[in-house]
Image (tube, rainbow, N blue to C red):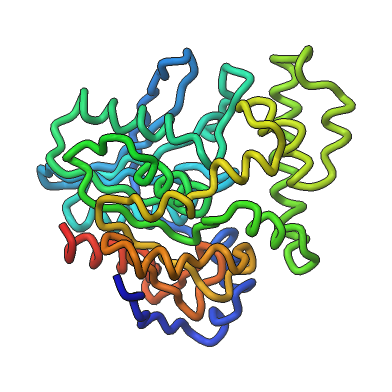
Length: 320
């Protein structure tokens, strides 16, 4: 499919990628979204919490929303999407990945960019317990990578899943990691590391024999965290093996349903390999929209309804 041209033109301040990213992550607030929590017990004995927002009219459509690294279902970009979809006659299921709902998960493992078994568990649960005819997926950053990987891994996709949207996607995890380690992203990297190390300390209380004080002290960068915890806890040799196996770019040629990727050129988290032009040109089901602006999950638009939110509705209406 030819690349999709973009009409996104934000106000002047929001043409700065860092301003857009920081404002949207730390300042934006979304009101008027009521969420009802459901605990999903997973096959391996762990759990995830699902935060539901229901349309005011009866509907057979649901959007599954997946947050990014160290996000949750209360982040403004999730609630903003839930609000606009609810207003267009969709229910919204906002997934809190393992350990992201305010309560540490039970197992030594946690969540990561390629944990598509957890997305599959959510989809199977919805199919088994609710009567939706149409299911749509929308993932942000890490959640976008997970969404695309799920669709392209070669599994039998349930017929109810009609289309997907992925925002600010690190399609090549190593490429993204290298960007996050650069001086331009030091403030973001420090913030991510602080949250991840905090969770590692909480995990140590449950598994002191697997996580030592020396392990925690050795985490100086995000790559160190993936070497010391992510890879060990999830069956990878090391961080690079994790990035190689879990990057969604290699799975894009196999995606069988209409899927839109929106990545901004001024997203400081994304390296050159995170813009899959060739894959989009060769797969008629894959649509790539590269905007000039937007930063990382920061597509500000007037009226506190963000461009990616309105664009997702438009895309799903076009392809569904």
